[in-house]
Amino acid sequence: MFFQSGGLGKRSRLLRQFLSAAAATIFLSMALLSYFISRQLESSLTQTAAEEGAIVIDILLGPSLQELATSKTLSQRQTEKLDELLKIALGDRTKAVKIWLRDGTLIFATDKQLVGQKFPSLQLDTAFSGSAFGSLTNLGKEENQAERHLELPLIEIYAPIYRSGTREIIAVGEIYNSGLRLQSELKSFRWAAIGVVGAVTAPMMLALLFLVWRASAVVTGQRRELQKKVTEATALSIQNVELRQISEALKDDVFHSNERLLSQIGQDLHDGPVQLVSILALKLSELNYQNHSELDIDKSESELKTNVVDLTATILRELRDISVGLVLPELDGLSIAETLNFAIDHHEKITSTSVKRTVGPIAFEASAALRVCVFRVVQQGLNNAYIHGKGQEQRLVAYETNQCITITITNRAQFSYENKMRIGGLGLPGLRRRVEALGGSFSTNRTEETMCVKVTFPRH
Image (cartoon, rainbow, N blue to C red):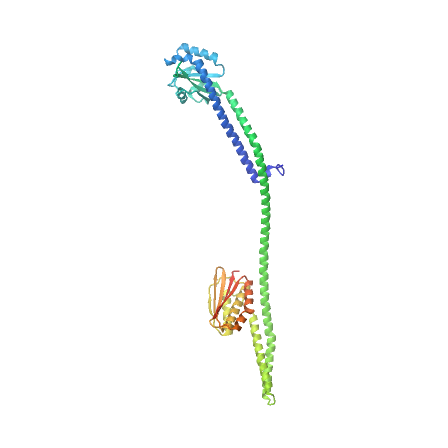
């Protein structure tokens, strides 16, 4: 079922990693288990062979070697007797026999060239301590020259030879039996152990493989879903950036359109109604002068005309004030600091008052919208200071900090009920909307004697 869709080779990296780890674990387990069991079996079989060899040496060779209890050599007759006995009793399985004294002297051997030589070894010391043992030998010792020529695996067995009727060890017998059968049994057992381990672990591996395959499929599906969501989120982020840029552009367009509209209204008021009212006032002044020179004009009519002239002059003054406030001065190319100073100078000129200014270093690259808004803030704030505080203690402080411009306008003011009503009118709310449209903040702080307007603009 899970070998479809391109096979295991096309599965995810997780599946491949599991297969590699599982295969390595199983093969290592097979190798270690087979080695451990074969070593245990080899030890057991060689120990059994050693015990059998000890019995053979004690029964067959022991009676013929009793003269070693009183002598350090074997007589010629005993040597020939041992040779005949070995030919008859041991057969083809035993390939060599050696008899050792405690000092490592070889007093009997099937290879007669070695007789009389000394070859001390730890194996002899162990055997003379009363232990019988055996092992597959690598034939690396000096006295194994004849055995190496056989080119066979051999089991080397050491067994003590006791004096008759006692536990006195008079010599050690060493025999070399063929290890072909032992090697064959060990090899068969190793393969059997590998087969058992494989048969036991294969179902577990398949079950784990299926679970990992399912988990890999789930992870792959979730990865695709996450990638899809990331792609969608990236697209939405790009779209949001584009929409924000469009919004900023539209906001700037609306701002500039509003300023152009206000400028046009101011120009129209100045060039239209203001001019007509100016002419009207001139005509009424002339009429009033002519009528005052005639003796038959009623005095009340003259006063009425005077009032009309005064009223017309007031209207003209107010229309001029409106048009001057709407027409935006030329701000192109000015920095923020230059815009602030320009607005203060303009206010001082039209009101004949002084403003104490503190303008710190401002490194903002001012946009047109920001310059216009800064100018309007200063214009409106100082106009309020002049109207409500009669221009007393006017002060402007501007500085840049934490990527923001902060402008503070303060003045001394005496608030009457009428003044408080006018401050709550359209001027400050309109100014607040203008500032917030550019991402800034607008706040006021009024006490009994002072008024403070604080505006903050972020860097654009």
